Length: 265
Image (cartoon, rainbow, N blue to C red; front, side, top):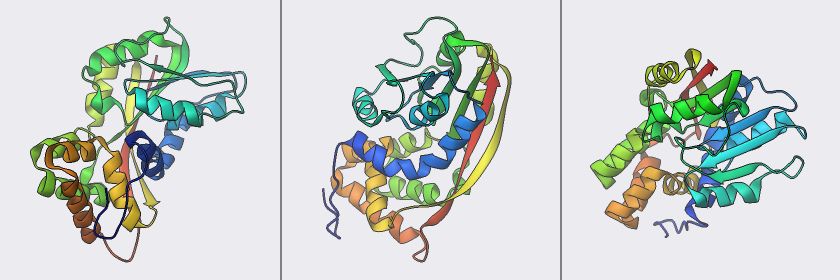
């Protein structure tokens, strides 16, 4: 696929996800893993791990004596995760599994992490009950969710472009990525976690050059794929062009806001 500038999308959707989503995820992955208070030898689960951003960061903290696992329903994402896992530690164990049916024994993990995944669980309560089941007493659950669209100008402009060129279905897919901390903290309490709390994190992020980044990032998201499926590749190109035009031309640094949610088992 090429737009009017000659931009060509390269690689599979999971490969583009790893490449284009990484700049947005990096500071929030750091906050997520830091909040889990990991230690050498820790056992960690990266729930809805995607291509393994949080799993790799957790492995660096758990070290050679630790154990890190990652689960996701998207096997294509897991193939990229397996290809990219670090070799300095024991293999990160990536497994295809839904969040509400985890293939682990009770009280297996010291920490369960979820980076931008809880919004998409079909049954949040069932998924968090499973997370509670596999977490040891006193273990930690940490998650991030995008929560304030208006506080993230890049996302706000992206949403307007998707609505204009893709219509209601991709716009609805986009909105699913944004959630409230209250919904998650309430569900964590119902699942058996203690003291769930949420705090907003706003981080200025400098994106790569926008001419390449905007269409690449859009194509790598679930809402961008929905836009392509429902309205065609040209709609994605037009949406990317509209997004670039809506952003300031003198900067590629924008604030992004997520909520970090933590709880104890």
